[in-house]
Length: 127
Image (tube, rainbow, N blue to C red):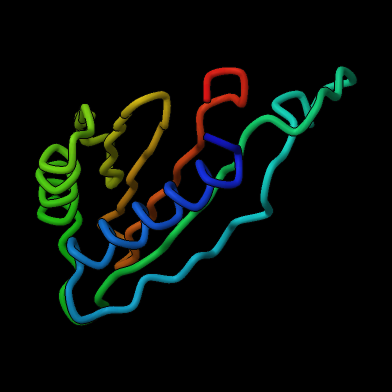
């Protein structure tokens, strides 16, 4: 699999899960700059090796972060992701998931109606 194919899979998966978790809303890709180096923030810039994508969705008329995180966990689990829901910290709800080297997080807050899905492809050496 190429990095582009991995990126396309991740983007499709994030959009599909977001649409299932919050039906009736259109998920929006808010971050997708394409392949970047894992060392982009250090002096050791390497070749492009991962893609990170963020998708947001939500329903401002019925914000329920606890229910959304729970449904996201069930949906991801049903699609083959290994999911771990973190304990609630203050007003922050969070889960992590991984599958075949892909990493994903879902975040929600009781003070905001948005649900944020962020995923990263496996490192190119692992594809």
